[in-house]
Image (cartoon, rainbow, N blue to C red; front, side, top):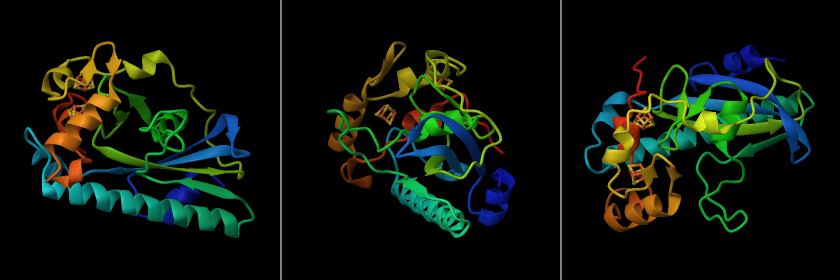
Length: 215
Ligand code: SF4
Ligand code: SF4
């Protein structure tokens, strides 16, 4: 099995697929599949100094589509005699006292699979589509891989155009050249955007990023 099989299975349900052998198994599973959907540019362009209701709806719709795609891939793997463990597209759980972490980092998985890198804005930046993407991750014991895992290094976090636009655009001062403050970001969204997306989305740093590539 390879990533072409997964792409054929999913047809147009996702924008890109990657797979890799993990450096360390997760839940006893040694391989990872990363699925990516590119967001609609006109929706992202509608974001100004705040998110929009359309963006919040799109965000949730794409997350749902990713969860459905991950489930379809999982059932396909299962039918072929393999195990699978899908990670929710958008779910924060408290890991080691970090309330903003997920069960597994989708960014880490996507970098493993060679789909892109991470920008100063802490967003995953797809090598072809830029930062306007969402991700989901499926772990499996099926040896589906076109490559070995690429270990996320500090360089992967600064591997963007380094223009500083996200730093100056962030109303929460959550992005600096030294790193990203998830609490400042979350607190600002909860306080200022409660009536748009119940305080769970913003998108300004994604909209302004110089790595935006329209395809
Ligand atoms: S999502 Fe908004 S508040 Fe959070 S880092 Fe980006 S611009 Fe700042
Ligand atoms: S806005 Fe500029 S500095 Fe920020 S992540 Fe994008 S390219 Fe990097």
